[in-house]
Length: 304
Image (cartoon, rainbow, N blue to C red; front, side):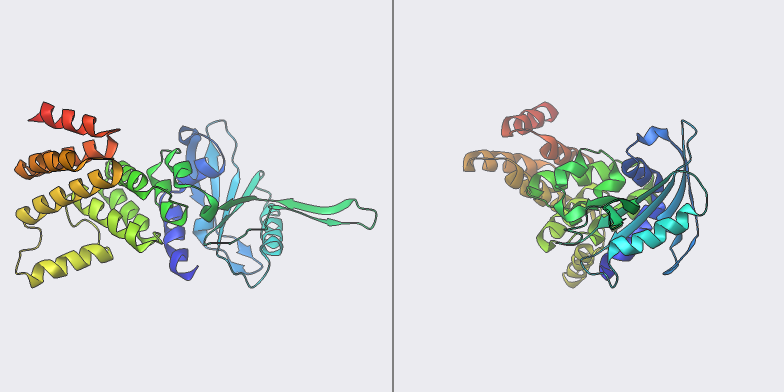
């Protein structure tokens, strides 16, 4: 968990309203404000980006408490949560919603989030409940369906059965975030939390192609710069970006759609005639969203 702990906490801190809407099961538009809270808990001061005071449009002000946990914990998570939740409840804020997000294969497999201590007669003398989310059991499509760029950064921790379909869609969605700084942070988290090296490389190539070249300092982009310097090219050179866009377009096309060799060659020939960077980015988005080869060819014909 050490490798993902900081990116996850930074992500929640930077995009707290999106996570609050998801975890409280409300629309993003219902979130009026989110404020971080510092609380002394039994295990030491909890990081300020895991306890939030949320103001909802209906006037409610629930406290949202989020814990990230990997496959191993020095102390059973249910007991830890009992300590945390009882301390938070004593603050007398009102409604309290606690969530444990498990990261890594097998993490929290047997945690139901519903726990109690019984009397000898079977009656519950103490009960506590928190929401359990196991990212490793979620499908990538579940996150995509939420249509929130901040949540798409978690894709690398989910089960990605069809990366050629999922990753281009996710990268396209994040690339449409208007604020440049937010886009940088989202792409940085997206790549930092990706577990599969091959999928990571695919994602980085798409990011470089779709978002004005070398926007984030990911391992793939560093390698690309080093290769460019070794070959004596100027970093950010237009010719290199155009050639990179052509390559990514054809790679995504071959991965997403079922093509015959003649179809691929025909589209490849058309792509190689394009030299305008803006035009190529537009074609890449068409290829990412197209349902079939005919749609790609029709779009190319319309534009030419």
